[in-house]
Image 1 (cartoon, rainbow, N blue to C red):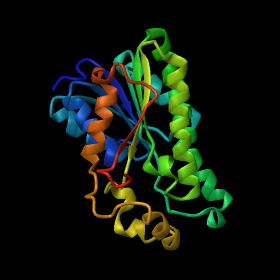
Image 2: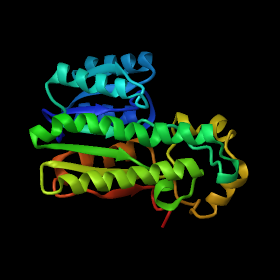
Image 3: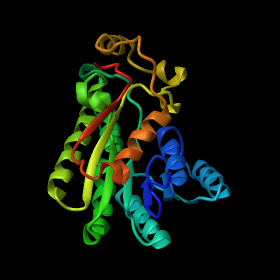
Length: 253
């Protein structure tokens, strides 16, 4: 407990799934959290839940694909809490396992804008405050698809780009108090991959990708991913930067 006592965090994509579970865990560990996502009603409900339990949480609507929204969200965190110690880049959209021959330009842009460009936007804005302070932890959410290419072409490329961005930012600030790491979830039950959502996937290519994973391993949960994010956010990982941690219960071994 208290691993984030006195810290201020921004969690993007906090309205559900891994983002919501991460926000809950952060508040239990003592952090004040700015919750961002596009669905304000869900953010407000989560903020109410967390504050009712004695935590500090503020809801701020944000479409992370829009630079002006990212600027506004970071300024809100500064205005509410005075600084930003932790950024969790969790906002993203689900893959539909579209291979390159069935991935049109609009889908490519939609996935890459949401899953990669958004990380660039808000990370750049947060660093404007972390760099003068000389400290901070950035945790980016990639995917096993970004490591192994075992997803749709746009999603695999975007999530691999998140890993490249993570290493590049870590290299820039290596030896300082600013760190940047990535968590790479395996299949994790959330609203993004319900049976209804899975039915929209390219079934042929999804089956091909599935041949490169062990199906006998149990699925990881949102709390498993939140625990890994907490590790990178906290001082427990003070000597670690530029690294990617796969959390998939061994499915890709």
